[in-house]
Image (cartoon, rainbow, N blue to C red; front, top):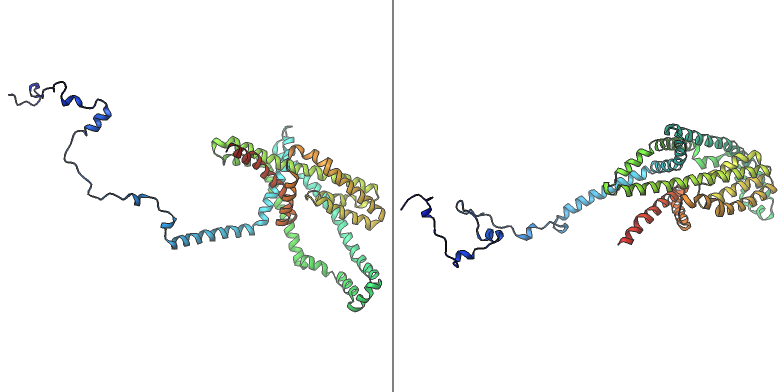
Amino acid sequence: MSSDPWERSSWPEAAPAGSLADDRPDSPSERAAEDPGPRRGPVERDSAPPIPAASLRRRGLTDQSPFGIGFFGTLGALAALAVGTALLQLQTLVLLIVLSLFIALGANPVVEFWIRRGVRRGLAVLGVVLVGLGLLALGLAAVLPVALAQVNQLGTAVPIALERLAQLPQLAALDADYQLTERLTGFIASGQWADRAFGGILGAGVFVANSVFSLVVTVVLTIYFLISLPTIKRTIYQLAPASRRPRARYLADKTMRQVGGYLSGMAVVSLCSATFAFIFLNIIGMGRYGLALAFVVAIFAFIPLVGSTISLIIVTLICFAVGVVPGVAYLIYGIVYQQLDAYLIQPRIFHRSVNIPGVVVVIAATAGGLLNGVLGAILAIPMAAVIMVLYRDVLIPRLDRS
């Protein structure tokens, strides 16, 4: 018998048909399950005990140390408090930034109008800014002299009016007991009311400095936003995921059109109000105050809900100070023009650019006025336009698909 293990005669004979060898699995998966493969040595078993399944679960909040939770929670609360305090201190700057952005969006349609006619964006922005500043300077030059003259006339007329009131029998006894006329006259003549209004000379200086600073910052930021508005749009688009970028571009463009359309429309409404008021004031003999009062009407036209009423009261009182006929005439004109403005002029201007329900305008203007006065009321309507775009184009379609 040969000792060579590779000799064929030493191989095991094939098992006969019908034996156990024919019962082996035919599929590869069954063969792999039956045959563990060649053994290369003794099987080495891990001596470490198995890890319990309960210890492999993720640790929850209840497994943390209460001292650690309290410490990190306190740090988070302090960080949030610091951010909120910083925002409150920078509230004026944030409002100026938002106001400048809205003004830029309102002036952008005019800039785009000139760009479509071949003018470079920088020159178009420069022209729009110069025209806006020129109108503002013209209005201030017309208002300030009239305002100073009215203040001086008020200082001389109020004591005379108080003396006439003191002659009434009902007030004579009170004046004799408490010297009301003498005290009010001395208070007005001494100029203490001006010191109380502005906090003295230092307070008046701070008020003027803050006003000039706010105006300069607003103008500079508006110019910057107008020039770099395409870059700002591209940056906003890039913040969205690539798959949703077309949708984000559509929503951002529509939102900006809504805000720009509202502010452009308000500028047209203000211009119409001032123009018609100037013409009517010249007709009734108030031409020397016509430009200043028209500027007052234009400024108050930007205040929603109550702006036109306030300007009507101010201009009517000034007209009554000149004469009864001009006062009555302007009062009738103001009431009639308010109806035309509410039902004819504004619907024709805003019916395409802005689609905001009236109740939303009232609620937004009231809430903005309560939060931040006149500036809050002015900025509330564009913010409402943004919210309405998100409501109509994001929330409602998502609810419809759910």
